[in-house]
Image 1 (cartoon, helix red, strand yellow):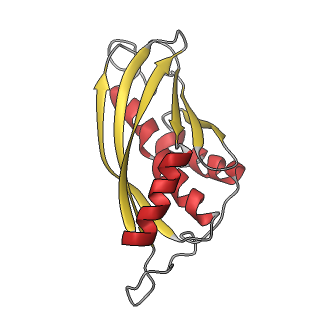
Image 2: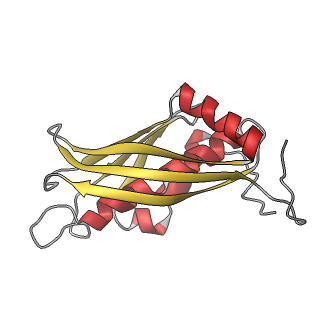
Length: 167
């Protein structure tokens, strides 16, 4: 089992781990905030020469990249803080571009208490779950530039023999 898999991180450490992750770092994507309970994350997509398309607005791939990592990381740490070792990843995603992004963008990821309770119950009963959330990419004027729908897949970690590592 990977050492990273069962590591508990502080919100600060998770934020900096993601901020130094090259696909985010080089696209000027920054994790601005992670809540203490790992149920909220705010991401900023900064405009730069590296993130602009031919029209001078933010490249769509950069917007999608900003949405790719936070959700699985939130689930990973949310359950790690509760003593559960899980494997999590983004299984599916869909983005709908509404308006050109001419300013910085903010994306906010929220997991409600109901989402977490449902996810915990699914892990206890089935050992895995899929959960979809919707995130908006909003510019500094409050305009929705993109709607992103993501499906996270989370399962209990497996030990060397393939058995679940929890419950």
